[in-house]
Image (cartoon, rainbow, N blue to C red; front, side, top):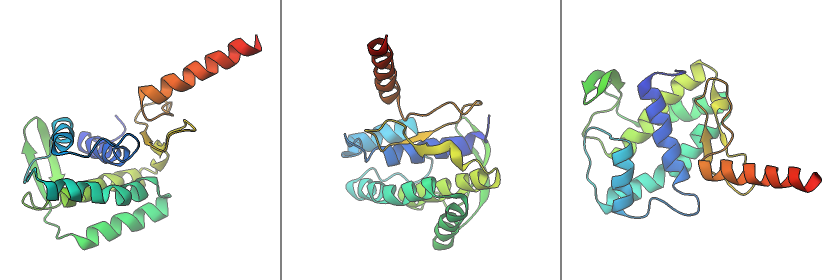
Length: 178
C-alpha cells in the first residue's frame, strides 16, 4: 500500500468523478450518481437530488486541475480548497472503515466533502512527492486520468478498454513488421 486506505479511496473517487466527464459521459442522471455512491460510499449528508448531481458535475474541472497540477501548484490548489471550507477535523470510524480523518462536518454538501477529501488525500501525495502517480491516460485518443497505485508504477492507461486497445494496436504493428 502506498497511501492509507482513506487516501487511496478519496483519490479513486476523485479520478472517477473527473473521468465521468469524458466521452461517453457517465454522470448525467441520478442513477449515475447512485452508482458513484455505491462504488464510493460517502458517509454523511446525501441529498440524492438534481442540485447535488449538478454540484458533483460542477467540481470535476477543479478536481482535474488539482489532480494533474505539478507539486507546488497542487499545494496551492489544496490550500485554496482548504481555505474556502469551514473545517471541523475529527477522527471517525464508521461502516467497515477504521479510524480516519473527516475534515468537514457530515452535514456539509456532498460536493464540498468530496473536494475537501480530495484535498486531504493530495496532502499525502504532495508530502510523499508521488504526484506522478496521477496522469493523463497514455492512449492518444483518451483524456481520462490514470491513477497508478501499483508498486512498480506500471499503470499507464485509465481503463482496461484503453489498455486492450493499445495492446491490440501494438500486436498488429508487430505482426505487420514481421
